[in-house]
Image (tube, rainbow, N blue to C red):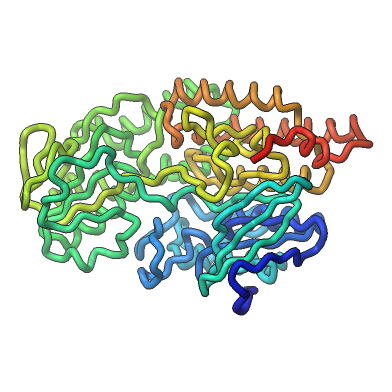
Length: 476
């Protein structure tokens, strides 16, 4: 990995080749973009703030100061077969759902195989990007010594993911400041060892909440899972097939959405019975109208009495937690598994969010009024993200290399408006709701867009894609 030595603080540098691209993040999304750029001989530099490439899969065991969504027992919730990059499968020796260190090793092998490693600068955190009058982007990065330097790039691709700023209950739960026990966010959770023999409450009902509750239940005196609302708990496999492999199959993609949903509902009813029989509230939505919770073990641990289910916390006492149903439990520690804010503090705010706070990107990739800026992996599918990100990466590389052209800003705004309307109707109006995508529908949309973009480029051969976008630039 290339790590700069000890640059002077606030050093302004224009080093790099003309037309160099800045890729922010070296996880699945960043590496997909890097491969697409390198295959077209487009020069680039990739920055990642971690100690090694791999994004969230670069688990440091809690030794690093930064918070991370990873924890010691983290595994893929999608199968390795579908999560692998095209043309580069995970090793046959891997289990169907690899552990974090296996995923990290796979990503390092992928980077080495495709000649990407020497372009990656780890322990380098991008703190700001700014559009310059000449159409370039000024990128400010802080290295491991705390020194900052500034570099110019022709394009910037943000592929850093969004799971970095922990989200806590807002407003804070009454009494939390007077609770004598420990309260942490899952970003600070490493393993269950510190909770051996303790009474632990996990707040949340997503994948991380269920994973953490299950492993705590093996060492804690008592494990309670509190949730605000019900959710559909789905096993990793249906009919012996990983659910993400089903979602990625051709036959599934051509089924109408109502039929897809009905099939899943029938199968879940047969496999696990009604969700309320486990003490979990009946979800206020149907399957696929919100993210599902994927777990093979949670329902079994509930059935065995190892995990108790409670409603939302109403308020804290000094040593007890009081729930919305009027009951209370003595608790030693609380872990908030309440997710992460969709946050990109280093980019111009209007490049990502609408005035109402939703993610407003054309095809979830392009900010209409910021030419030269792209986002990869800012989507939330049910299933593996890799193939969708590869399609995004190829399209981004085609645009940067001048092989494709973007539509008008009006057309981009229209598509964004349509997407946000649909997302609000199906999921909600929060920022996290606006990045949900249906795998087959989004895949078809990206493929159509790539074809249309290449056609636009051929239709106007004398106008450079990047120049035409720069003419529409809105000052940052």
